[in-house]
Image 1: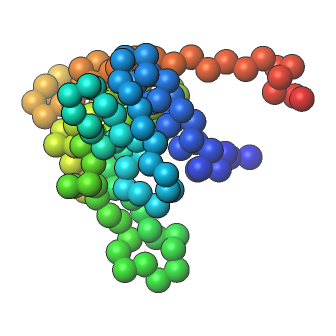
Image 2: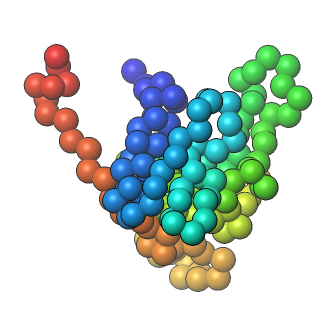
Length: 151
């Protein structure tokens, strides 16, 4: 049975918080679920609004959505909404790589999806390629024992 999208998102946010705290950021959580950012990072000089995303490793790249979908709402005015002007960074957790990536909005401000290359493209293209390593902040290892999972 597939996991509920909220569970997947909560796991991504937890991974991001863990890595950002380890990197020395102070992490603030907005009070409401109905905000455009999931976290606020404080580096001691500036505050930054962060939208957490779950990434999926596909075709040698971590892919993540750069907009919110409202298609599941009854009679939405818009089906997709970007984050331009509302967040400063995307923080992406990819369970397949175990890594958390911090991507400035301007590096991923596409209308639908962005990609971070984990392996070089087969066509050897380098222009317009975002390599995952340049955005990686850290890794999180999540392991559960079989005994704990069956309780």
